[in-house]
Image (tube, rainbow, N blue to C red; front, side):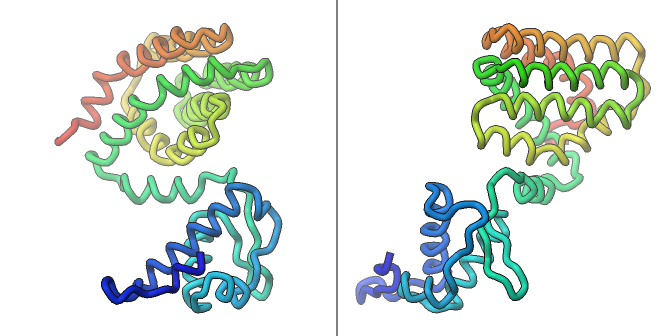
Amino acid sequence: MDGLAMTDDAFGPLAPVRLADGVLAALSQAILDGRLKPGESLPSEATLAARFGVSKQVVREAVRQLAALGAVQIGQGRATRVVEMTDAQPLARFWRFAVGSTREGLAEAVELRRILEPQVARLAALHATADGVARLRDALKRMEAALGDVPAWIPADLDFHEQLGRMSGNRLVRLQVQGLRPVLEEVLRHFNSAQRSKADWQRTLARHRRVADAVAARDADAAFAAMLEHFKAADARLTQLFPRGG
């Protein structure tokens, strides 16, 4: 990594931001492969600057980027410590910023969810455990108890889909589903803003139950198909609310 500080007459010196990116990449890899573990302190700015052959300002910028990603916690007057990457808040902030509250942004979020979630359900079925299924059923029971009660229904619905992400066996999938939660919450508020019949609520619950049953049976194809059916059934309403290009 010391080569990051070298210059080449043919290309000129590397810009400071590129040096910071190099330090960021090295520190990120050390965190991801376990050389720097959650709870451990990063070496001092001076130590890192000497190790990488860069200025302390470059190291400071790289550490700030790590903090923005939620990978480290910078303490006032304390050492910077590595944080376990289980929190999707940085990703949630990114999606909230990227989507905003525009119809176009929300339409894209619906489209993204339609692409992702059938495969998430498939993975959940492949990696289903008794405990995971029990948690999924619990979210389903909360949805049933909240039929017609939008403020109670939305968190239960989101928890159901988030649990599928947890059951996927893929840490990045789990973080992605969790990160999308604030955006999906807004989509669901719009979706449930109009008056819905009791039969409509029951049909929505039944679609979720078919997903849960397929996951519990560890039938990956059935889980994929059930989630796809869920989105197809809601397409007319979602398209009305969030028309692409509208």
